[in-house]
Image 1 (cartoon, rainbow, N blue to C red):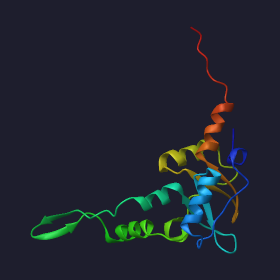
Image 2 (image 1 turned 135 degrees about the horizontal axis):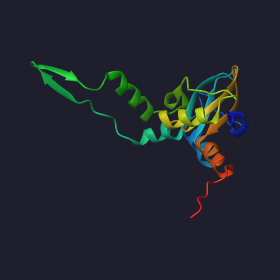
Image 3 (image 1 turned 45 degrees about the horizontal axis):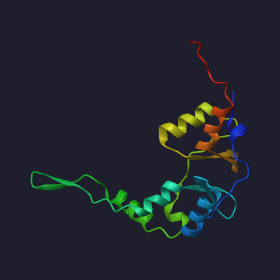
Length: 157
């Protein structure tokens, strides 16, 4: 059974929380990757920046819907969520746009578990951790490549 270590990319490109959004976007586009681990000055993983985080900058601010109940206004969207959306839209640095405390996998995680995490949670990139160190990255393309190496079932007609 394949493990994360069998398909992960080991040439890891990282950014710091202070990296400007434009520079991070340039890296994502030039390297044709979906996500970048974000590490602090000590090399500790603090977040992940994905293309979807940057695409969020192009959307409009969600206006909360309200309804009236007994002459009271009840908001359907929390102010905290709106604040987070505004911060992502207006982000100038990676720290403002990244997803903090990302889900990670270990080198020994089965590929089926990696695929399940990606599908169930709409993750495109998962950092691979060995202890406190980022040792690789698994992206959806890495998982898709495993399909090319599997023998295809051919039905006889």
